[in-house]
Amino acid sequence: MELKIKIKYFSDKIEKLRYIEKKSDWIDLRAAKDIELKAGDYALIPLGVAIKLPHGYEAHVVPRSSTFKNFGIIQTNSMGVIDESYCGNNDQWYMPVYAIRDTNIRINDRICQFRIMEHQPTVVFDEVSKLEDSDRGGFGSTGKA
Image 1 (cartoon, rainbow, N blue to C red):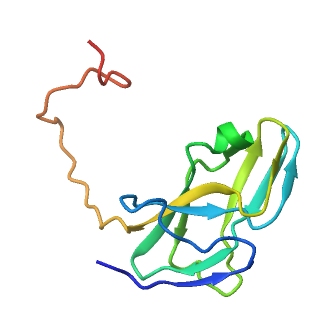
Image 2: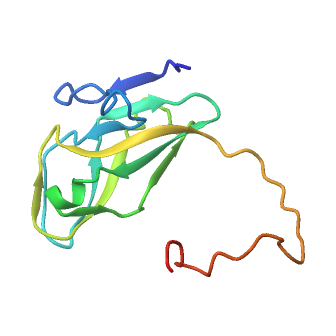
């Protein structure tokens, strides 16, 4: 299934959005301006796009696997969630970051990625006094002998 989505670019200096590779569900996002950070600095990095997501969808924005290694930054909200109501003409996407070391991010650097997901369905909780499945071994025990 294909979704047609409206996108506004805030800069003609960043590459147009495209899938990372043919088999990936993720799309790279790029810095839309040069940013110099010192260790301990916080910044909102503009990503140069505003996107009108379809009703019932949201975007999940996360760092690329190489972002920390290449730039020494971490995304401060771990994962950004952008819902379909953030779609105005000036609702540019940003990546909130914290610098672990001095770094320079240049316009068009690939710093994060996103994918579009359907909203979670409405959940109704059915309270019980016991769950019938066997225990896995406690928190953090997966794969342990």
